[in-house]
Image (cartoon, rainbow, N blue to C red; front, side):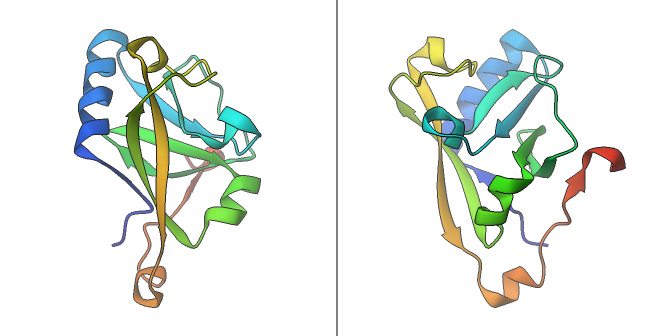
Amino acid sequence: MTSRVLVTPEAAAVIEQLKEKHGPLLFHQSGGCCDGSSPMCFEQGDFRVGSNDVCLGAICDSPFWMSQDQFAYWQHTQLTVDVTPGRGASFSLEIPLGLRFLIRSRIFTDAELNDLVPLVYLDED
């Protein structure tokens, strides 16, 4: 099956570093303005996922959630979480490292669209 969300090796290394320090993590992309359009990394339990969120999959064993409104725009794209130097204006855990997560994307092929990993909604957990 085709994954909806991937991670670069560089971002995976940062995620593993954050997991060592903070324990289990989760990602959320709200789609709001500014940093809301960037993936944000939280300790599991520090961010409350709501009924308007959908889980696209997991990266480094960390679930990646997105608001359903945002997903409506991104549903035809494969997302890749990457990392870059710089400081975002969010509460994401990588910020103190002088880094920020970002999304790279590409449109799914027709074949991939027919073979996507199913979404998970909060009430299915």
